[in-house]
Amino acid sequence: MDHLLQVMDLSWTQWITVVVVALMIGFSKTAISGVTMFAIPVLASVFGGKDSTGIMLPMLLAGDLFAVWYYRKSAEWKKVFQPLPWALVGIILGGIVGNRISDRAFVTLIGIIILCCLGILVYTEVKGKNFMVPDEAWFYIPVGVLSGFASMIGNAAGPIFVIYLLALGFAKNNFMGTNAWFFFIINLIKLPLQIFFWHNIGARSVAVTAAMLPLIALGAVVGYYILKKINENVFRYIVIIMTAIAAIKLFI
Image (cartoon, rainbow, N blue to C red; front, side, top):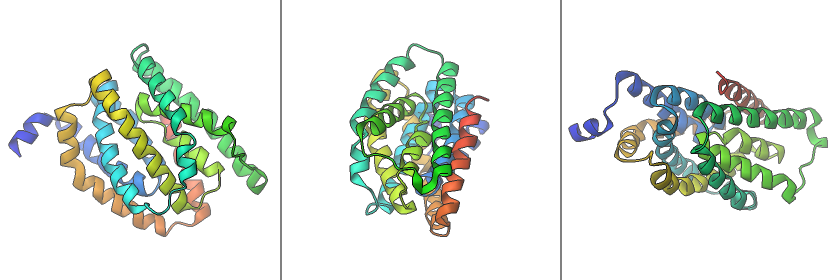
């Protein structure tokens, strides 16, 4: 235990931040995905740009494991795999761009992308059942590329993929299952890139994740039971509101 604490070497501010983020990650993986977006600017302000993504990614993967277990029978696999190859393209682009522009420019770009997608989402809500999403490449290719890019840059792809799933009109369990498996695969792909390309994941990140596992699990359990009690329409509006708030926070 002493060795673990020594490896992490966190200040009190960093400890408090990591604890809150761990609970948010667990909750977001089984309930409201937009919750995690609050953690992104907070972690960046405490740990710095790339270091914060290195701290967060292993915790996200731990949360993904709980999510794919809870919703293992609820994924719409066609909608997981359609945008996946294009997400890989976005991840590679994100890795290259991440080494060429500042963190501030990165965050601003992600915020612009999310707000544009949010406009589409609000439009789909206004149109209601009259809005139909075609099962065609012009829709899922840009979703995949943008999701991969935003995920690699700042683990901020949640709102983009949320818009894709909400536009398809999934029930909440299918929504959560498809979301969980997509991001589990995406985060696994990102892991070696961040270890060997960005060099921002090491013993410290792994130690922090190990210490936070009970809190990630607690957040996941709480989220799972809260989701059961949320009305379908209420769930959709909560996701929209959380996504809007999270996108605006990226500019602060």
